[in-house]
Amino acid sequence: MVLLGRDRFRRGDVTGTGTALERPSHEVFIDRPFLISRTAVTQRSFADVMGYNPSIVTGSDHLPVHGVSWYDAVAYCNARSRHEGLQECYVVNGDTVTCDWQAKGYRLPTEAEWEYACRARNSAEFSGGGMRDPYCTPVDPVLDTLGWYCGNTGTVREVAHLRANAFGIFDMHGNIQEWCWDYLHVYVPESQVDPSGP
Image (cartoon, rainbow, N blue to C red; front, side, top):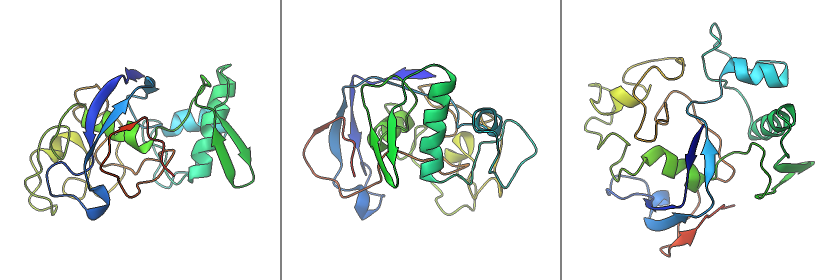
């Protein structure tokens, strides 16, 4: 795990190459320190806690778990918290999930926390710099060193085989999609503190 937070960053499209949903870029202050895993949750870690592996592509304990719903991810967080004797962060009542932000157990990062962890204090499109070839061919020299994507693979790959970002976190660009507590929504131009979104 990596301890992050108590820092400011520019969230959203800072280069002018993003989508309308990523605008306007705005300052976010991460005031609540948080821990984030250096890699995506592996199939082995998920199966050890949950007792099953939902992944379609299997064959290695070091592949990231995939094929999980947002509710599965929340259930994993609570189960791992219980497994390690920590207070659960989530209260689940049917389809309604609330988060106790003071609990010390596992939880999904907010979208803002995820972007902060992904950017690793870099203001380019990717934590390693700006992308030059966004259409998979030819292989982009920046993204090729950081993440598995359509230019360098056609399948799920083991975690931590490419270069980590400046925070020591692997695979933030590509390989699998990752769940956050909230979803990407319309940004406001004002500065925000620990936004948790809808």
